[in-house]
Length: 192
Image (tube, rainbow, N blue to C red):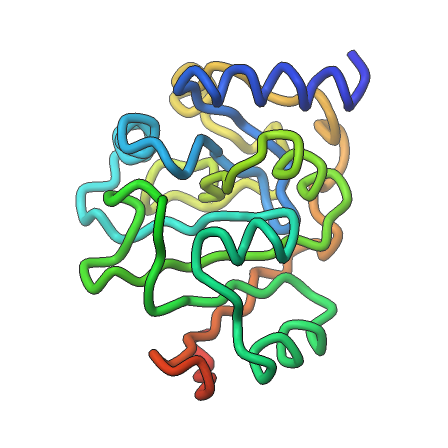
C-alpha cells in the first residue's frame, strides 16, 4: 500500500475513534484523535497508564496549532524556528481538545512536526493527533517497529507499514526537547 493510501486509511480509522501505530518524528507512536475523550481513554488503557499524566498532541501546521492554543507570541515563534530537532511546547491553555488529554491545570504539550510524513498525516486528518510512545508505561519506547510489544500491537486498529524496516524518525534516538511557556507567552523554560 502506498504512503498516501495508508494515511487515508489511518485518518478514516481515527475519525471513527480508532487507535493507530505510526512512525513519528522521534519513535514509534500510538495515535488517535486528540479531540476525542473516548479515543484518548483507549490510549491510557492500552498503555496501562494509571497516573493520567497528560499526553502530547502533534500538529502539522501553524494554522492547526493556532486553532487549539491561539497564536504564539513573536518570541515563541522565533524560538520554534530556531530549533531543527523535534520540539514540544507546553502551552498554558488549550481549546477544543479532549479534556483527558490536558494536564490538571489545563496546559497541553504540542509538537509542530517538521517530519514530512507526520505533517501529511496531521494535515490529512485535519486535527491534532495524540503522539505518545507505543509502549506499556514503564517499558522502553520502541525505536523500531519490531520492538513494539504484542500487547500494544493487538490493542490498535491500524499499524502503518511505512518505515517498518527502518528507524521511523528523522532524528534517531533523539527525544523531543520540551519547553514550557508562561501564561503571557513570553517566558520560555526548558523542561527537558
